[in-house]
Length: 336
Image 1 (cartoon, rainbow, N blue to C red):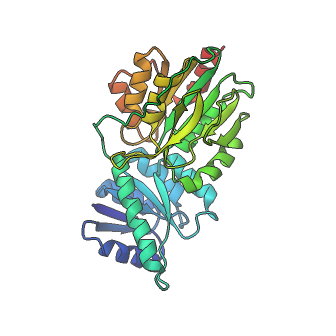
Image 2: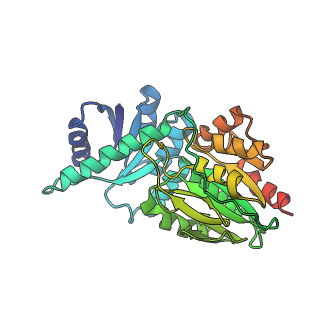
Image 3: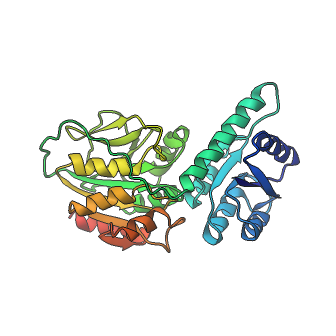
């Protein structure tokens, strides 16, 4: 796997070199010292994964991520010494298309091996997320399907790379009295879900919370998947989690959520698939579309990464293909 490093601190670059050197399958192909160089290097030789620092001179990691994803999209893993201290920039970079974030390994004592192992695991994870997966998504079928209140309304949304910014724009356009529950699966490290929920709460008049086992979808409330387990609609129309299986590429899976709507939800529902790498959500959205649910796919121009939306569009899974700026208005219209 070809790796690019973006970091202005020589000692950190050396730490990352050492971590990669212990895994011959990972080849360091270039080092950039700031965001300007990073964009130039990606245009010259596109790596399989970019290890992106957040705080740098000239152009920081968030802006560099935006430039790279706009011109030469590739998997970006944020690597920073203090994630919480740089939370604002981390979420900004995730909004531009970075896939995950990990703490920079340290050289003291036995901590290096632990930190290096975490780094390598994250590199391999984001590389898997970026691959096109043709195999069917896992479908978890609850044993009981009950008749639901047909007046209950639901919006299910899937997002990956670039998702936080797209979600913020979409949710910002929904009124406080929006008459449907919103359930979101966003590919993100579970450690940052609480922070993302707090950040999204600042962007919208709706109530935002991390979904818990047994939650009942409520109108005007946004529920975000909070673990690596798959969030789905269970029998009795409540939210719940099921364990992921070893063959699952995405944790949590958007496809699992969308399929559960088809299997369980008897009220009105709309499926929305936003920006992201790979194909997660495409098959599930197609299943919703085939069962006469209204489905929306984000268009190419407004997507940070036109992977998941492209896969859904290719399957003719979309009732509408819209810029993210128009999706909220469409949802309001559909539920009036």
